Image 1 (cartoon, one colour):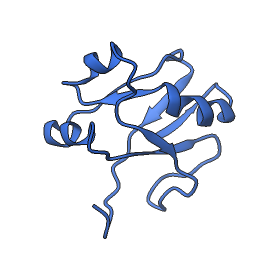
Image 2 (cartoon, rainbow, N blue to C red):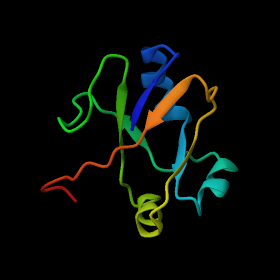
Image 3 (cartoon, rainbow, N blue to C red):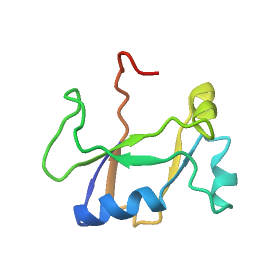
Image 4 (cartoon, rainbow, N blue to C red):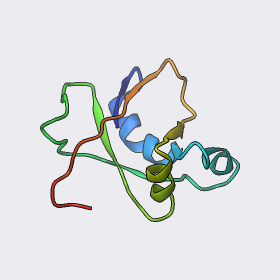
Length: 102
């Protein structure tokens, strides 16, 4: 997940993983009503070379945990929610083929 915007990069790095809620389209409404964040993201310090690394872009990796990833993968849907001003953040989701990792 590539994130850029008008918010300071430090704020994006620190707050987004704690405040973003991610799930399949089927699960997102239940996640929004609960105290659960859904699938987690973690800061990607060294993005894969296939990604367009540029100043001002912060990269996160979606964690494929057993709680929420199976429904995302089986439905082929991805929904996210964040409490920030929609005009303050730009996001792009990239899928990178991984060799040797499940």
